[in-house]
Length: 279
Image (cartoon, rainbow, N blue to C red; front, side):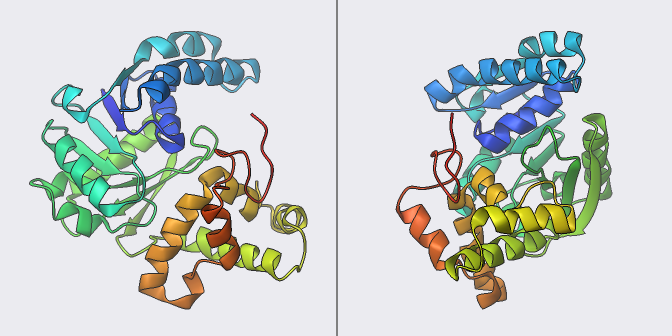
């Protein structure tokens, strides 16, 4: 089986890692030369860390860099790949452009890693919408065991089964959800994150203590504010603007989120968000 991931950001790197760690040749499309040149080394280091912690077989970790390739453009992908996963920023016009280019390479299954944009709206740009759906991964991809498979109106049953099989291949569980704004997981995740942000604004408690409450009282592996920093506060803001347009004020972006993004404090990737992050 052959796989490509379009986008070498946080999510794209994670998705590429889990497919390569499953022994599958994986190509990443990343137009940024600096990011692209560093990608294989970063994932090789991640694999070594996984092996040291007993989470990845040492032989698999050693082989992982040989299974990865990086190209600068979608047009450089091989034709007829088994799966192409788009994982570019949550901008509908950008996703539509990338997906149209990816479909031209003739993959058997085309998926978007969107966390909030309608699969049906993206499918309108495609000639083969029956072979397109959502595969929503979670960050960090190598740790979280779920893939949310999003069924569009045109997605056929073969596409759904293939997506679930791909998830199983990389050791993930999957759920199948209908294409509604925010799907299932984003609606749950973001409503908690936005409420936690409003609690910081209202000085109910510190970000650290709000996250501690979520972890200790409810068994969450990570608190909603730390997770927001990991996801990227700019990503959270894009999602808030999209979901609030559908569901109204309950998903409106908190003022503190707007302010942090305007200041360039995007979370872990910028070194500052609700927390300070070291390299």
